[in-house]
Length: 86
Length: 353
Image 1 (cartoon, rainbow over the protein chains, first blue to last red):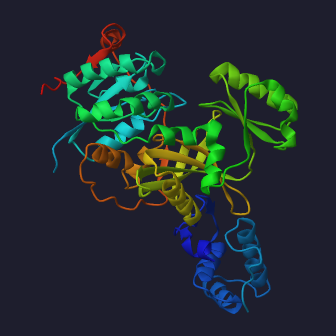
Image 2 (cartoon, one colour):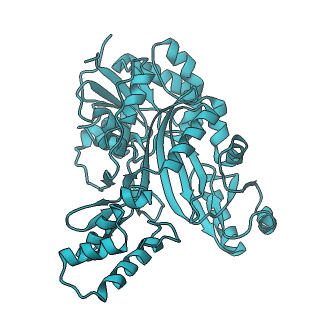
Image 3 (tube, each protein chain N blue to C red):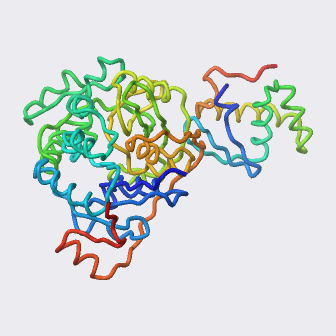
């Protein structure tokens, strides 16, 4: 999880990984979730964070979280077996 | 502030396969006006000769193939004209000559921070496998002097392989036919031997580092290339920090007791393993990133070579980028004619000591 914590995220959604030098651009939802993951929030905490910042239906939220975590795994930013805690 | 330093630097061939000289010079002059730079060139049209904002005086020096005697004489003349305190050689092929002359130059008060001849030999491409005996992860490799050896290479190193020249050049070959073509290309460009190395897939990372000669690390900056030219040269890059790479660099220094600058070229594979592809025994062309990121390694080398106390080296700023640019320099015929005929361009008034 150190790589996730070390990510530099700008206000505009530009993400820099100092370990690999890779850069990414993320939308507001992903930016919000990354912020929450870096703070160590569990799934309920992330859902609450998204509800607080966006107008969204409850059924969208778990999918958004799972999609982002899958991308993070794919880019090696979290360990392969990483799951958001409940 | 310490007394002004006059530093002679080689490698002014800032082409699309650039020598490190211009990067070293820009670093030496970065945010300071107490360094005077003397350029040492092999050809009248080396682009750095015409960068008069960077180099005040430039002198031709003899090619390494001419041996050390002409180099000794030429350096004595240039020293008389410019009074340089330090030399920073930056090209692989010239290093043996400078290493041989180092004791004589030191006796005359000229400092260099160079590896020993044994260290130079240890990291040469043909002997890189020996670093494996010192605990460094290096891909399997073989040194070939005959194309026939390629026909059985798959028995010890499975395809794909990398076919390399003794100094420069590398091609990935997936088949025997590609390997044979690459073999002849390397021989045609660089001569024998040809080195065959196991291809390792992963992310290519580089480290610009300086060793103190006692097994310690003076400083190091890690970089990942973000734009690569068709010659495999980094045209843009970003400073990174990978703890595993830091450990690898420290291990290299302690294992070899490297003295002076070097560049480690490393692959980090998909499992997080590291593989040292090459160790270049001098600054890389991208070394100005070290100054730009806050850890000026060329200036540190100049200070150490001059026998001065090292100014505190600050940590570098991860995320600092470089993006190279090709610019057309404008010059009149005068500088070119003086380089071509007299072998020197002296824009300053020189130094008489």
